[in-house]
Image (tube, rainbow, N blue to C red; front, side, top):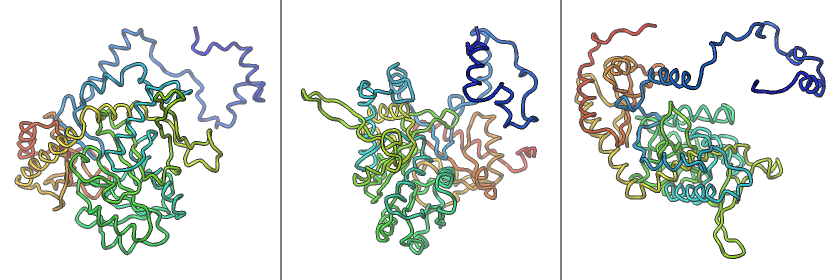
Length: 453
């Protein structure tokens, strides 16, 4: 039985309806040399059992954080995920990435999103949060668009210490000519230069804290400067750090965005992520996505409803704030379960563990001949290491010892070949940290085989 059971007569009717004589005429806009003339060279079909064996064999070719000691970060981290997270999100009523239509009939889904929004507000110190963003980068782009609409200004200032992929995402949304970079000084935003860059044409200033290089930014001082020029302050915290670091609301942030992967979501080859977006109450009408609210019916019973959903299908096009609406529901539910299990004390403890273990490792690395820290500045759980051979060579050399040594910065900044970004989470044991140190001590420039071009 074919997968698409249309008869020849069905096809004729469809082609007639769209005004073409045959299938070739339908494809006529595609250049002749790009059209496939022969059947695809596919292998014979396999049974379910055979497919399972094949996929398992292929998957075993991968190395994962289950097989290796991971120091990978740069926006995606290897944190412990309590078993209850997977249990809850695997329940059939939640195991869909999309908000059901006739949403009010799905009270359980709405309630858990409401609880997620409430916890994000508490975590960030903001008044309102939504639950509809793809990832940290797209959430930032939406926030910049939102700030520009609120202020009626075109330009946005983004620190060079913000994750480069986020900056690229903003440029894709807004256009490169609207984005102005703020330079760094010793790995942090240069406040003296920022002060002179602020003007009446700046809609917002974007600061990541801890920043892409792991360094803590002078967020309070920057917030004061931004508001003096009546611009909006967009903060990008690392959510897992908020049990020990100050909340963005306390910095004076007006809009907060973040990548929520660290809150109970697996790394999964870098995705999917969870875009967090929260703001002060006065900006609720300009927020993209959906907001779930709690109410009572006429009999006084608790109920949950979609309170705001400013997409074009529901309101006039000129009043819509953004078309982004595909709901990262399952990721938001995972974050909600994670935050519920951890609670304020758990978040504090995991933050303290990340901080303490990262600083232990950094101190040990500094004592290895040829290694040093690139920046002499406070950091949380991630730091940039100057290496005696190229960072890429170290990463390749240590994979044979089942260690993911970190992220070579040269993959984003070609000239920085000898800089390795190292992240430490609460999962790393003392033995693993010491083992990493011993392997780094074995690195000698003459012993590392040159890589092929």
